[in-house]
Image (cartoon, rainbow, N blue to C red; front, side):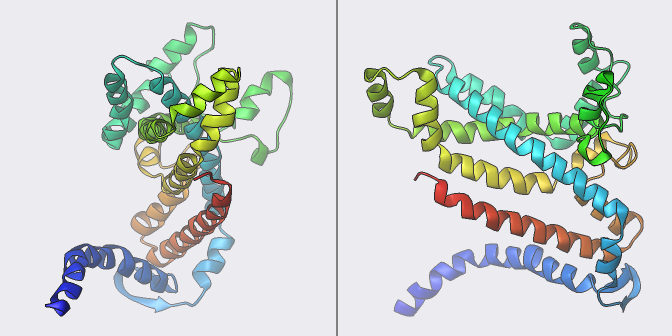
Length: 310
């Protein structure tokens, strides 16, 4: 009987463990092995040692797609945190129909990413898109949202005659359009997460602060912000990981990562190498490089946990 009790819990987790090993662990190990081979799906692969990694370090498109991905992370992560926290604070202070607003904010997150990408592509259309129509009302000329390769900082300061080195020009306007769409898509989820964190803060702190004459501004920075730091840490970690894996938006909204590869992200580059040119070994090497980058950033972010107030 005692032996049965000891085994029973493991039997319950066995199906999930099997799926984890079959669809996560084994593919990761196989990807690592393939990265040392020249294999194009057809036929047997040829062992080439670290040649794929050497070629990767000399590949300008790899570095460009990695740079594009970092621009994506640099913009999406802070924007997601700022806007989701702001909306969560506003929702938390609404007394009536709070549930309705939660549903409205959460709807984009549960909507198919394919459908959302197609709709936003239409909205960013140069001639008939809704975005250009809206900015036209405030006197801004129509923008080439998904076909402009110049950086947003370069475009903003172009009229002043200021020039930027390519790497300081910021993400291209086409990539910035994807950033806008991606922030909007994930806003509802992060808002709900923050809202749950805000509702766990005791009202006693705010009542004491009001008695002491603290303004709403001070209450936010001295009470709210420190006490939602566990939530902020979670949102920071998960948004970073998810953003590095962005793929569908590029696949559906751009012309193969164009214009001039300025929207080509690292996951799309892996897909392109693996399934378009059938360079599975090289694609595996790039995938492993991405895995190590995400792992390194995750470990670094975990070190920031000491600043979290639990």
